[in-house]
Length: 127
Image 1 (tube, rainbow, N blue to C red):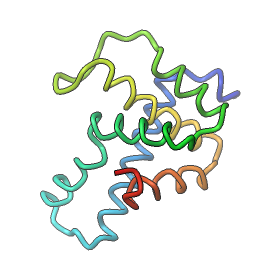
Image 2: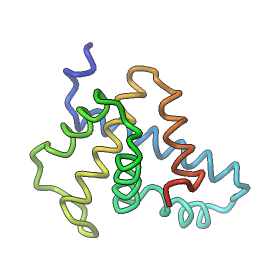
Image 3: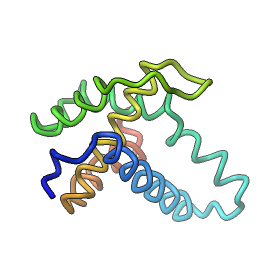
């Protein structure tokens, strides 16, 4: 299947799982072994507000290719009125866009792009 034919929210669904798994592995590598501590630490990376923040910083750094920006724009512009209670619709759409581009890379087996992005996120160069 052509990746551009996949519903953008389906790509975000895949990207959400890949992103969260990466963060969970990273936190375990940091020797955080208690589930409550893992959950607390993960909020610095997996909340919609943080994902939207990371997307903004990556865009400011011109991290994404034109093709990747097309995926991000599709996700941000997707018509949806649903969002979590703890964030705005705009924040939610930006977080969904980050997840969609991760899903896009994962579907295309572009793990090196996921690694590059995640290194910037967990490496602290975006803060």
